[in-house]
Image 1 (cartoon, rainbow, N blue to C red):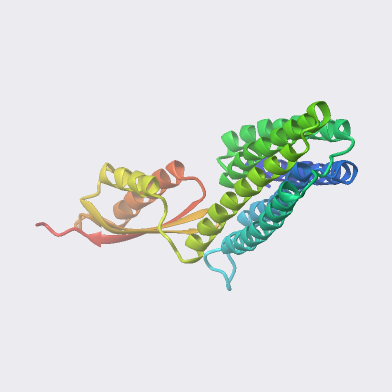
Image 2 (cartoon, rainbow, N blue to C red):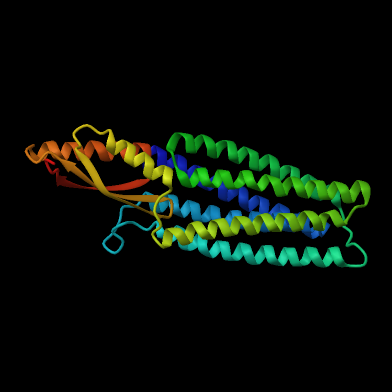
Length: 292
């Protein structure tokens, strides 16, 4: 197994392990405190666990070669999973928001209990999450894995609801302000919904063969325009599938040169594109340039 693959798998296993620990710890804290802010963080960690498992599967899938039935690989499975996850996140955020509104509109606030236990769990969650982020960023820097980098970025976003839950618990414990818990939960539910819509749109774009981001296309065009031996290029097409980018490009070459020379130019161009855009699949078609 390649060293980069082993590193990526280690980051994926660490993500799954941390998410599982956080789910169990936050469930225990929610059972003792009844705090909606912790419930929101619990749902977020449960989704992290599902996404971490999906990311780990994606890493294993990326290491497998295409087969006869899936000649372009199996990366679209990531998009199908992400689309399902986004729907589940939206449903969960709606349930939490409804519960928070009911508590806010109730004549008497629902009191949060055992705040100290909840605060301890949330502080431990933040420390464990920070340790995971550090390791994931080291792995992503060495391997260039977009799956690991995206998972790391997602955990950075998780720190906000964790901090919000601590603030809500401190307000309830020190100042008897129990309604702040519902306010924090409502805000966190909104953040979950926005994140779900972003994930869902990205997955739907990939399933509909949407082109790669503009900066990616600009990078490819710049490499092709400055590559030695090329007289031009045309019909650049890109599409996304999971974390993979597929690139199709027609290049224009001198028709008098040998086939080996033309092959070497295309091979060098493909290597440059793959070096600039990790986890991409490049197909180059060679055309004879017109003298005009």
